[in-house]
Image (cartoon, rainbow, N blue to C red):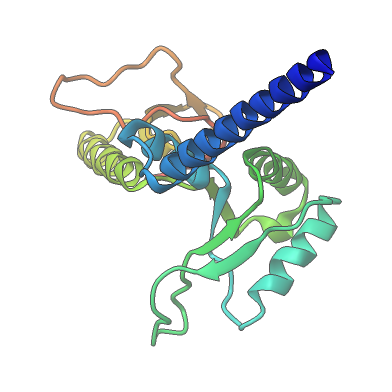
Length: 216
């Protein structure tokens, strides 16, 4: 009887300890969920959300953006579908102006695969030649890319004045690239070219996917 009584008491004690640990765990979880994430973590999450985005330009506005993107996915044999498709900015009064189209996927992998497959198909399908795609950007990345575009435009203006066969363009990662026209009239990238002055600033470095041209 004494041993049985001691076993019951020990069991009751262990149960009380377990219940206490459960309460502590619940309190810790509540505190963690209520606490805002650290700035570094918050910034990282923001970047990851933008990496799930694809920005489309020069897509006609006819009120069927979801259908346009869905048809494009089918044409590419791309199985995943975006979670959201929406235009950026207010609807223009000018019918010739086309707002950017933001396409959001559920994962970074899907957005990058969509970009890659589109760029490959675009090489063979002339009907897609007018559409441009780029990855999503954070506000800071967008501002840096604007600086890079300004640099490329300045360099292109200088090239025009000097009448040399050189052109400058901005990649999606914000880097400025230079091209030279060959004797056969084709443009080739100058791989070892660097910005000529410390006054010029490069944009953010991010995965290189497509080219946003400033001149050609």
